[in-house]
Length: 221
Image: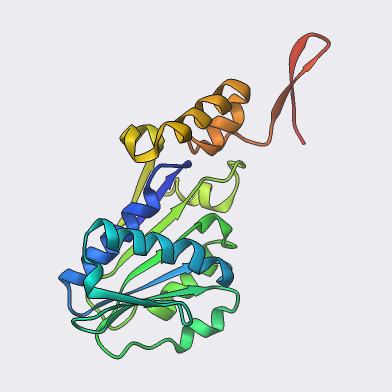
């Protein structure tokens, strides 16, 4: 199954993927995971921190350890791994092997950074093998341009693909905090288009409205 989770800031889509992967590793002794971002040097500051947060939230920290180089999280009772990689050089993924089990979970974080579905498929073909059940998470903030590949792809009716859209209003207020919510409301008042894109996850397009001779005029560029 492939879960496309799209939404704006604070929608907790990445947190959900991280929690599901940690739970999946614990429940299935043959399961391993690989989490990918486009650029390698963003992995430790984003994916790893989100996974470590999930481990802490589930109160299972005593069962996991992690290393920064290579970027990995190991489930100590069995040796199962969560491997984190950048896609700077896609050829590196072809040689990835795991000692026990298979890569049941595949996570593309900030998927809008990738070049397109061909790049996604190349990873799938390299990683999703040797098992009988696979779970893929594709998390992203929809790009501003409705014609961006990931926006168009999410409109397709593909078997076994589940599309879910969320935003920060779906999340309990105390998860985000008053300062975070105040910042969102301030942007909504100052620039509704940016608010819709950044916080609500709406592909509002490249048109911007400006005041011209006392009237609103929409400019395309």
